[in-house]
Length: 163
Length: 202
Image: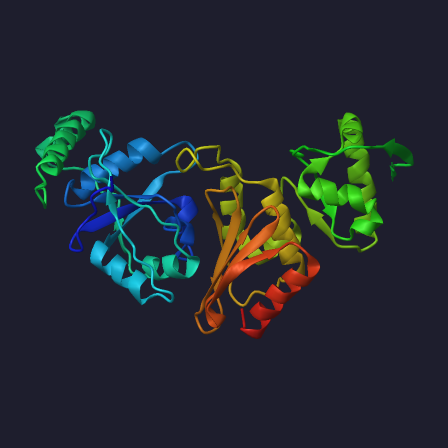
């Protein structure tokens, strides 16, 4: 059974670590989107602040830390793929998990030339700290509640889940 | 069949796959040494009989002999704990700092399928930089999930190039010629890639 896919009007973010970004020269590695199975998170499901919390929890380690999140619109991503020679149909599959209900994946392995074009269109976001009352609720509780919410909506095939 | 190393005859009969974890220097002109042996080290293959003699003392002797070759001005590949002076001059202090950071990355640094920095990738990058060092712009150094080093920079027209140094090949994307592919590590292929970079002012 094929997985559901993100609609064109959704925005997704990708975690960026030191190894992907040369801060001093402001250059990015194509490894950021080469794949296969590149993990992204959907801004339609979780706020960027919460996604940053998940990135840090899952990806930070003594050697490497998440320093930026790169945002891109799914429709724009697909247009870049279509305009590439030869055209590539990029899909973003919805793959929520208990650890990250906003999780999605780009399953394809993409050529370097294409990934560098995608990177040119990324909107970088610096690390954000959650400021609302939600910060007092443990992240694990927040993501489990959201996961149940997303799964229920997928079950009843409701689109555009609300944050 | 026999090979001669350090004036010692080492017999071997059958080959088996064996990854060498650490070889300090590998000469690029293999005929200086017993060529086949170097080729086998390079490819990650070795022979059981030789492996038995692959001790610290053996390595030290190997390093001494190879340094003697270096002193004669013969280019060598480095598969080393630190970068050569030529590589440092190309990468600059920023690249060197990033290299030192990447050396500390452990398995799983970017998800469970990410690997630590490969010494052989360092060797391939050194091999490349030994032949192409006149970069028009200071390149950026990256580490890929495969544990390979990768260089990215632009030519004078702002067109990008990206090279990923695998243990046995270089994957490339050259925007100026809109070409993407890979070359195996041998003199002819790498020379071709270098000529493309030179022609396009990289």
